[in-house]
Amino acid sequence: MKPVLVFSHKSIIKIISLLLISTLLSFHSAIAQPTALPDAFTADYSVERGSMTLGKLYASLKYTGNNYEYSKYTKATGVAALLTGIKITENTNGRLSGLEVIPQNYLFNQSRRSKSRVDKAEFTGGKAVGSYKDNPYNVVIPNGTQDRASMELVLARDIAQNKAQLKYNVFERGKVKQYSFQKMGNEKISTPAGEFTATKVKVVREGNKRETIFWLAKKIDYLPVKIKHTEKGEVITTVLKRYQKL
Image 1 (cartoon, rainbow, N blue to C red):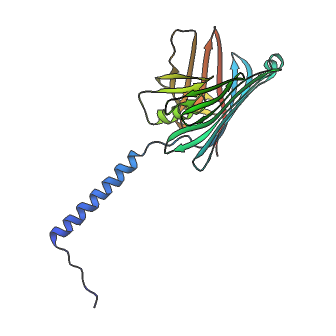
Image 2 (cartoon, one colour; image 1 turned 90 degrees about the vertical axis):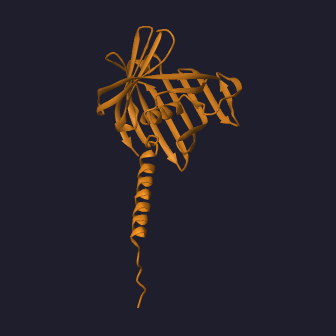
Image 3 (cartoon, rainbow, N blue to C red; image 1 turned 180 degrees about the horizontal axis):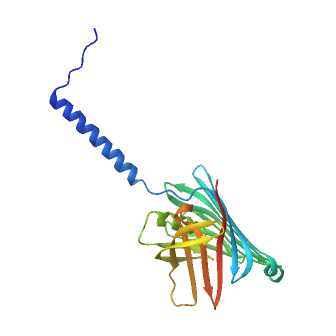
């Protein structure tokens, strides 16, 4: 005959209490997990000035294990292509530590006919080593410094986590600059890719010579569905046309 386990009244209460504590801890752990970085995706955007389409922007984000690669390619089209022939390639890759984004390589290449402007950097050993317009640099950078492209991933992460302070050290053109963003509430945005409820975020700058506003949609992990840049009376708008998770 198998032995019968007999629990006292106090033992049963203790077991139930432990089960409840375990369940509550598991629940707390589940809700305390930070929101993930944007999922891997591909997307197409149109770049417009008023009713004129200036070009197209293609973006993609891919993960391989703990590594990421975020790429953007902009190409002038139509009349703009005839006048400028401009092409812009921007790429960042690096690794992830939890939800920390650690860039390792950055490339920005803007070509216009026979001219080009290149900014490339390797982040290693607390330094950024590279060149801008063929002028070499070797600069000590603070921990957590982003490049201009990886900053978009970090901003999406922080908007998803509802962080109040949106300030980042960003390395560009051989220097560390501080970018700050201000939330301006939510808006409904209509795009060729669909309707979105987006968080409106403004780049904080001194003076009023330039203004850049992003609309970041929860439905696509707080990536931009619209960007509006105003400078010298000219307004350039970038609008999402297609988005696909990979």
